[in-house]
Length: 165
Image (cartoon, rainbow, N blue to C red; front, top):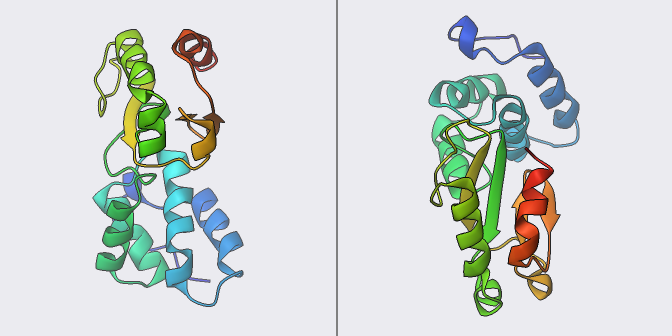
């Protein structure tokens, strides 16, 4: 097991984060293969991946920082800046476009009083646009944290949001 390294107390990988990463680690042959899972573990507890956290993960897994930076910027599910407690993603793929996702987007922006890419003042919600959430046959699709809502219609958006308030 690697030694705990790290930069300062505020940005250490916690024992819990290391325990979770170690639990995943044995399933894979090399540390590059667990990089995404490791980012997800750290993000689960911190809600985003700071540059210092990225360096800590890089050192802990003994993999190149550039590799982790590429991965963390490629996947929209990895947040490189602070987000709200609940991240709302709406799909703007072609299928959701045809099924008029913009009505859902407009209701979300109006209800939360933010634009896409912003976080509410109370840090409860962040609204993001994503290119595909899968389930194209069930659009428009909305995802809040790990929960997926399909066939969303505007009049149900407020009921969905109430589950997270």
